[in-house]
Image (cartoon, rainbow, N blue to C red; front, side):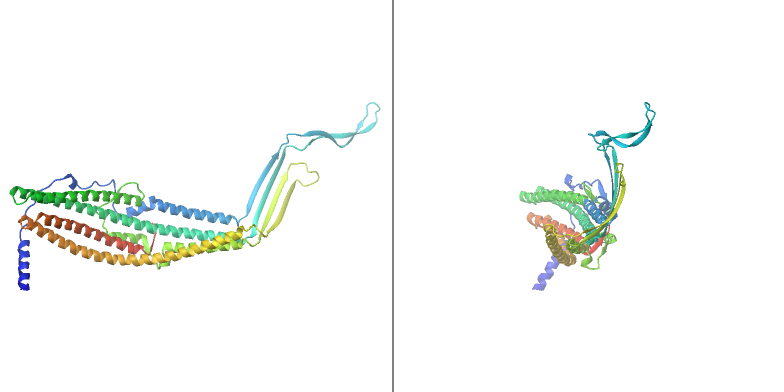
Length: 464
């Protein structure tokens, strides 16, 4: 009995499938026109990476951070190099007093007696002295400064940390750009499917109206199909807006305040190969840029603790000063040159160093916890990224099966409705399920590409 029933069902399906699909009436609607292409369209992946390298604000910010770290390193080096200074003075006294001063004697002949006499010689002296020039040149060189030397080493480690953060920024930018490109292609595909769905709904509406004119359909059938057209039209409007937003997001990801489209010639299958051209896999999680940067910051935090400890040590320096003046100093030298060694022993500064030591120890502990958190997060990200590829592929297989069944169901339902053996409700339901299956399959296809790129970049370092 079951065998006979199965054979009868198979013959029924074969006979139904053998029917020729009648020609559907042509339909026209402004909404069926493709959405306008943006002014800028990516022609290849290399163009996207060039825009990313030249216009990304996040990348420029990271580069500026590297420059700032290098500048801080140069500042730290200055504490170990000689310091030379020169200064000049000019003094003009506004209030002075002039008085004569005997500076010697001279012999003169007295005209009255004709005898030689000694006469005192005087000179006017201005006090205080005015219009005096002075020049001083000083030179200092630290000889023993353990804290400054260690601080310079810490500054160089900070440069390494900033460069690692730059590498992680590049990785995240490449991932964001790839996801944005996939999102645009996905939105374009969905918008195309929405137009196909609206066209089919309009064709069904025209067919139903023709059947109503022939008496094979009633007003309820027309209303149901018309409702499906309205639903398809609303879905199309929403899909077009999602496409525009995806293009705008791509533009922002590439550093452009405008919509950016993707040329149809670009194949998503080449996205993974293109990403590999600018990104190389890291040997381990600890070599991924963000984890390496967290490890470097932990090292810097430990060095900052040592910096404070070294400030308790004495310092020894050498100072030399050369000065000259135009002032009248009598028998003293107008030009002097001195050399001295300076020993500085810190005794008590009110507890500033102790407070800095406690604060830096707390920062070091925070850095260690951040490193551990980065490792844990990175481990889960890698596991999830690899699993996402398998999930996306399996989901695509299921979507393909569901789409095949939905297509066959829609085809058989339309044939049955055209032959008067089906209802308009069945027709609308089958069409809705087909649209959902088509869109779902498209999303799953692009999700596979996105998952593969994410898995590759989960443990990689990029160089734009």
